[in-house]
Image (cartoon, rainbow, N blue to C red; front, side, top):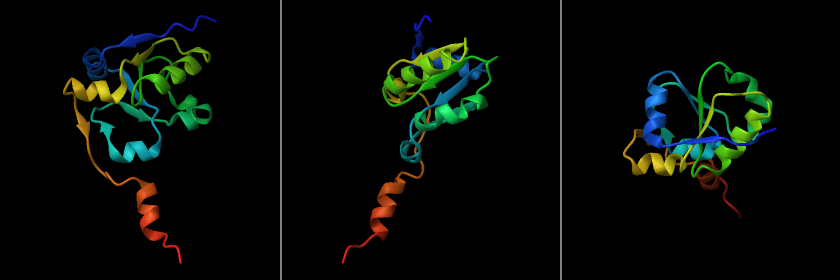
Length: 124
């Protein structure tokens, strides 16, 4: 099967999302607690859960897949392509590139769960 996946520039990705595409963020939950894309029409499925949850993704809409840098999202795009998803784009440069172009992000819950867990675990 052809593994070619189109890459999309962050500005073009935002335009597509504003016109009905879904932004699929495949970063892990700890990463999402620190920083998220700030757009309507996004779906959070960490790459580690994609095999169990890919049925939640509509096949009839354009899907733009993002992560931190574009590597994990490319893996996710290939996985989805192998499951007959057709309208896939890899977000070139991930959320890092998204930020470089001044596109909307949300900084909330900036303390990851790991850090909170370490505060409560005191070794004696």
